[in-house]
Length: 344
Image (cartoon, rainbow, N blue to C red; front, side):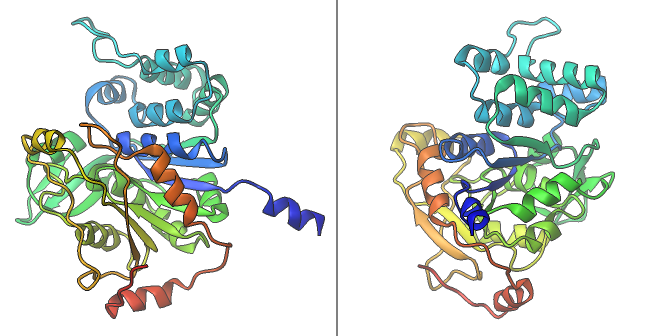
């Protein structure tokens, strides 16, 4: 009896999968409620400081990992600011984030990226753990509607052409045991928020990742971006995001979809429209084609920069926690194929 009570008194365990600034924003909200957080981070970035360090030192890109470590850190504000500091000017250090150099140095010293991350976790007093989706250097390869291919995250975005399929080259090995264990023990698995093709999908198409997500008893939540992403999801609605995600993994993978219904300012909309970004359209209850439950919630932060509000997003995610139970994925996939729709 005592052991059961102890287990129930544990704070909830979250696994968050993705990359970019969206993932780190969400982590800042979740860490206010639990320290049982595992961030599984995309490693396909090949631009900016991360791309330079990846090329020069042969390491996995540290940028998204750095952002997640900083988001979960309980270190003094000065130390976090130092970790995020980016060198200005036109020197060889120009554009590099100090945290990226720090992680590159730790990897060289320890000889192992996982040992480097453990040391960084200790130094920054991180609430949870940050793990790479793969320890291998991989590139994103997008196949377009006309059959042509574009290689590299930066080039995929610059191409500004519809993507039919995303792959990782070379194909990495299966996910590590600690990632599988984290997914198995999770109370909630969160995909995103972040760019669909360059942040959310890359970790999910690492061999074994989607299967481990599907096998977990935890509900799976997809947090849809508030705005479309140029070169990736132009003209996409929420249903399109889920369609692409599940076509790259498996039908019925997602249980809940969170979309923003908070009003955005005219200034923000005008600014983003200059970059050809528009709010992600949300289908009506009758037109929603997926099995996953669609939740419309005020998730956008106030102001003229459009991003998720960490606190609001965390509260909605906490509300989706349910008692752990085994899920029948085959039945859910069948329901999805049969066009079952629902909304609370």
